[in-house]
Length: 358
Image (tube, rainbow, N blue to C red; front, side, top):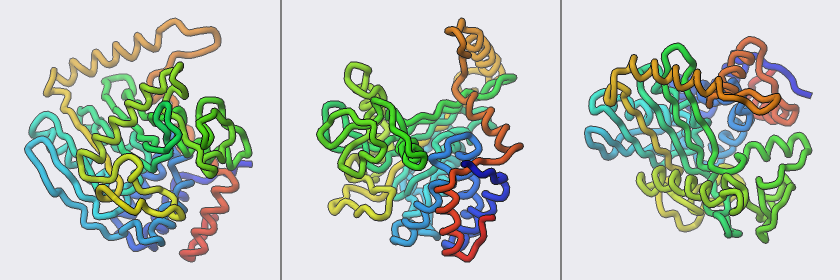
């Protein structure tokens, strides 16, 4: 049974945990905001359910609570940011802000990041561009859990892509998706609910399709978007590879099977090819292409026409970002539901830092 917690209560609890880890007040506040944005938008796999994972990584010495986040290379429209092993929840907004500042001057800004960690939901960072009449992009590589098409070996992460595009009267277009059929966090939710995974999400260690949500522990792998070759998994493989290259090969982070695992109990690869995890961000000033008001009016027209597309029986045509926006409105008013295993984990974290969840 789910239990409901207010956004503010979870935000304050999470902020205090980050402070007890040694984060500055500013970093703790930003990290809690980014993490809780996932719960608000209904991406429960990337919200407070991940808090214990960050704590364990910090305890294992893999997260630097007081990083010196800095630009190590730049041109007028590009930069490379070194996250100094900090929380990706803090490193990523810093880097996206650099991209936005460069776009304000040059029209577009592109920032690649190395030496970082898991950055929460990609959508948060892409959406930072919206209030400035800019288009935002965010992507990251991740723990190698995904087998390329025709492979048994885990080579890529779930490697999400997010794009946020402003409109005028209509809500923004916000696409935020993993390049796998399902993100690993979805498997974790199924595990907590003792439910099977749908066909096409995972394969066993021999490459055969599986519905066991615990398959990764036995050497299995997540599948690229599409699930199998006949349903286009090679396209999901390509998308995940692009994210890996932009985020890590371009920045100097670890890529492919060398990407560090999110779980602290797995060892780091013994032969790193870079530093930490990598991210990639883009910002494009709309008026670098056409007047912003004109563009946003046409985005409204685009959105309205797609909403009016003839639906199949019993369905409704949605615009990317619609479900998350509705969920955020609901959860800000009614609270955030948490599964009992997540509550148990959070209470254990609270006891560790002498904090009370309830």
